Amino acid sequence: MSTDMITGIIAFLITLMILSYLIGDNPLFRVAVYIFVGVSAGYVAVVAIRQVLVPDLLQPLYSGFLSGISVQQAVLAVPLLLCGLLLMKAWPPLARLGMPAMGFLVGTAAAVAIGGAVNGTLFPQFNATIAAFDVKKFNAPESLLNAVLILGGVITTLVYFHFGARTRPDGSIRRFGIIEIIAFVGSIFLAITLGVLFAGVYSAALTALIERLHFFGTFFGFG
Image (tube, rainbow, N blue to C red; front, side, top):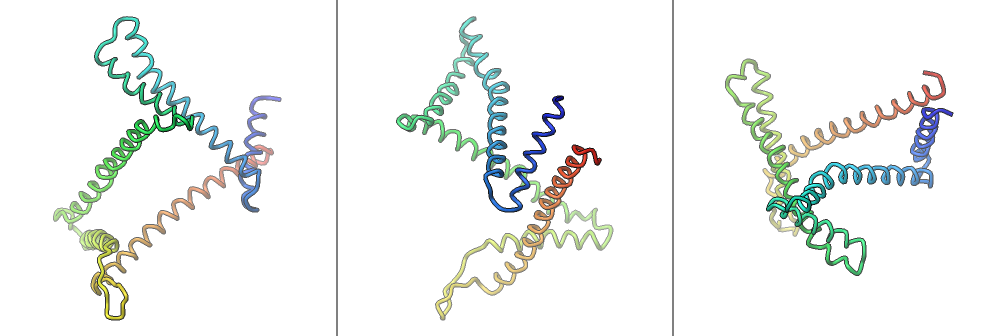
């Protein structure tokens, strides 16, 4: 039996195990999920070791021990120490030793995520909203309407997340009337956005299903 046939049979069986979720949660689907998670974790670990730890940490330290450690190489002892402390999380009695490394890791990840959100999402959206009102682009009525819709969507969506309210005589807590109206318009923009995102996810899932069906046809010689 050829290698292609073996890999094809394995892919066919795992695909069936995933599709078995259509009849409900079952052990076959869970095994397939475990395999996927395990393979993904193993792949990420190997990539991190071979492309990050070994060339950027272990090899410079090893070469420093052979030829004399420089200041730059001595600094690498800090991440090496943090890696060692992080491994302590695997042993409950020593888990507390891994807290500094975990805190540093979470803080760095949060900073990178916030920086990426601000520089990669908020600022480009601000610039796009401002650029929409460039007079040079108002060469047609549609351009002005598009700019107004963009600005209206931004303002009403931001107002939707305004939760300032006051207590009414009947004891209920409601926002100001004008805020409620603007927030309602913002909810329409949010619904349209979420609908488009869901359509994109559904389209991607449908594409994956079509690819799997094509694989079945090809595997059994129908394609």
